[in-house]
Figure 1 (spheres, helix red, strand yellow):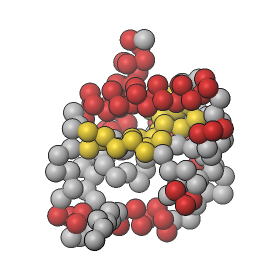
Figure 2 (cartoon, rainbow, N blue to C red; figure 1 turned 90 degrees about the vertical axis):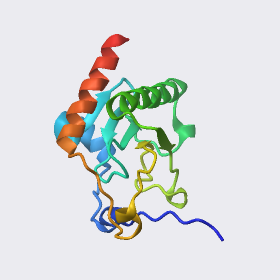
Figure 3 (cartoon, rainbow, N blue to C red; figure 1 turned 60 degrees about the vertical axis):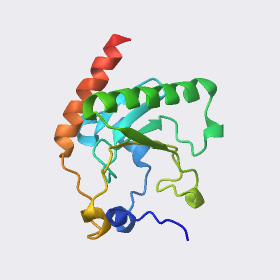
Figure 4 (spheres, rainbow, N blue to C red; figure 1 turned 120 degrees about the vertical axis):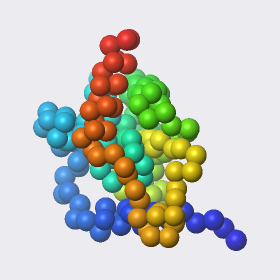
Length: 165
């Protein structure tokens, strides 16, 4: 018998009409980071909040270039991408005092990528006991903090950590 991971709260994303253009290309070009929940920009990548989160603080690290595979990254892009994942872990830990993280990359449709044409890395903070009866029985995920508060706290910590370098 195998275990199953249910995430019915993601159904809204699955059923919603998808953008015709790549959101990971459009949003950074608009230079409205607060509106698009962009927390941090580096030379080759950026950090953005997930608007369909699994948990509070669910963010993504995204290369600036429109590519779909790790193999397509230049070495300097790859290095910065994972340095930014490392920075993101540090920021999330300081803001949310989480017990652990899920860090994941879904490559291609068969690999579970929701936006398969533009590589992105998910970082999801986790806490002991963070899945409760609402998720299990009601198919409802409780995200107790609103996006504005999350954005403000995370942006401030990203800025603080960047200034330390």
